[in-house]
Length: 291
Image (cartoon, rainbow, N blue to C red; front, side, top):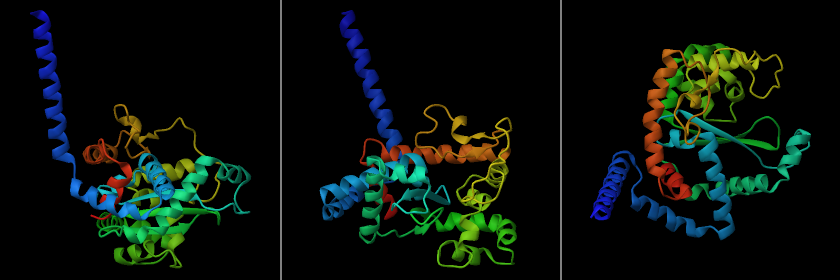
């Protein structure tokens, strides 16, 4: 009798858990199953090796550069770096890294991404690809135009200061989305401006610029401030697993700015987590790109 009661209780607990999972997923998931089926059909154009390499590249992007937060409309921009060739102007350590199997697979995944990019056109996002910190290194950025324009407008004085001229928020956005523009690197190489565009918050971006000891992302600064300051990592503010599918950046955890960002990204994190839950990361990412 007692055994039957225990089995009944366990069964009810499992049913309640499954009901909760379905409810949460239906509430936060924004990727329909039909969208995944359409992506799956397109992926048939890739060879098995290309598909594996592209999946590896997407996985690396998802867990280390927070692209999904931009794809679901909560983060203005996301970026990642990849070494694409064994260039002489790379540091010796990076040239050795490039030879490792993981980096070679990441490079092949990047090339597959470039090769089939037209097969998965983005309707709402802008993708730019440019060289940074050495000819052999590329940086891939995905931009949410609406959020980027809002952040640029909100902090227009910072962009005007660094560009050294009066300009409108739309003019700044045009510079940002056109790597061939003469002023493009004055934006993407500036720690504070990129921090603002990445959704870190202006105070946090300025804090990190001070910590690095200089404004340039590509320059190797050595006069960094002591770690015994107010700077912490944003993901450390979250319960475990904080870094998994969470925007990771330097912050002052005591400011209203960071507290507001925590609320903002907590909601985004639920959307990202449930949209990817028990699904193929590659298919979901490509589906989000095509929305």
